[in-house]
Each structure stands twice: as structure tokens, then as C-alpha cells.
Length: 214
Image 1: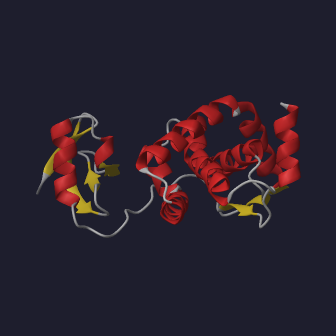
Image 2: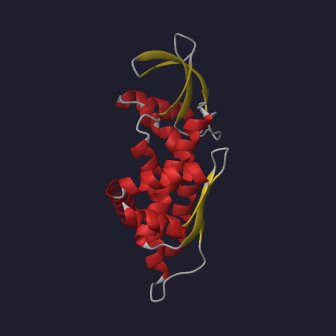
Image 3: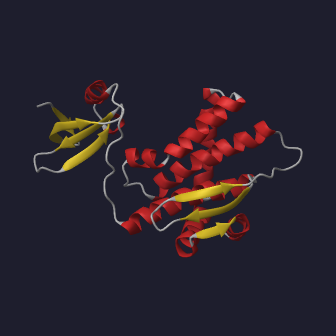
């Protein structure tokens, strides 16, 4: 049985998932799902990567309470919506289901005089803002869980980059801008998340009104 040190505990490796992921069990019998990036020790991190290289399944998500899942989703979607409203990226509404799923419904309209690539650059920032917002408001949540929640966002970012030819440098700059804007608009994001938890659906006008009021 393969063992590896994780978070100060000696754990048995009981399964592998997608590349970089491990399913562990500690001495108390508790199951832990860890990503190679969660390992602080470089040797352990590389070892975790080698164990899971080539695997194709995602790990089973760690169970959280429905209320906690809704709060996380609200923060994530509010990050998208508030940054979109601030950058004047058009969208129709933001909505969250009772099952913890969320969406920012894009609009088909765009400002006249703005090129498609300029709009796409703003969409990149807004796409990054969801994960950054979730990480800001829920710092105790493991990074691998936040990444898992942002699979659709990462897919959208890859699609936009491929269609408009954004470079790695431009993508890094977009993420840095998302980090700055999430901190700058923190109060508006928090207010939008609270409103979304209460109403489950907000229009673009609703979000813009919140941004203007805080």
C-alpha cells in the first residue's frame, strides 16, 4: 500500500482521479481528496503528480451542507455578474437554483463601436472573477473544490482564447485584473450575493443598481 505525507499526516493512497488528484485515507479512517498543488512539499507534490498522471476521472466531491453550497455559488456568480456590470459586459440576468447551480445569462447585444476582441477581453476578466470571488469570500474552501466549480469558466476562457488568439501573457493579465476588481468591488459582490440568495434571480439592471449604490 502506497503512503504519502499530507498536511502533517501519513495517509494511504486508496485511489486516483484526474491527473494531479489523489484519494487518501488517514490513520483515523477519514477520506481525503487532495490535489498535487495542495502539497506544500515539492517532492510530495511531484510524487502525487506521478501517481495520477494519465488518469481520467474526477474525484468524488466532498459533501457540504446545502446552505454552504448555496453561499459559495452565490459568491461565485455574484463575482461574474458584478465585474461584468462594472466593465459594461452585457448580460440578461443572474440566476441560482436551489440545488446550488448558477448561471449568468449572456446578452446578445454589445456596445456600438466596441470591437468583438475588446468585448472578449472583458469577458475573460469576468470569467476569472467567479473563482477569484469564491476564493475571496470562502478562503477555507480547498482550492481544488473551487477549481472544480469553475470547470465551465475554464472551458469558456479556453474557447475565447482560441477564437480571438489571446496569448498566455494576456490571459495572465486578465486574471490579475480579475483579482484586483474582486477586491475593489468586494462590497458590491457581497451585496449581490446576499440579494441572489434571497431572490434567486437578478437582472442586469438589478446588479448595476447594487454596484452604483455601494
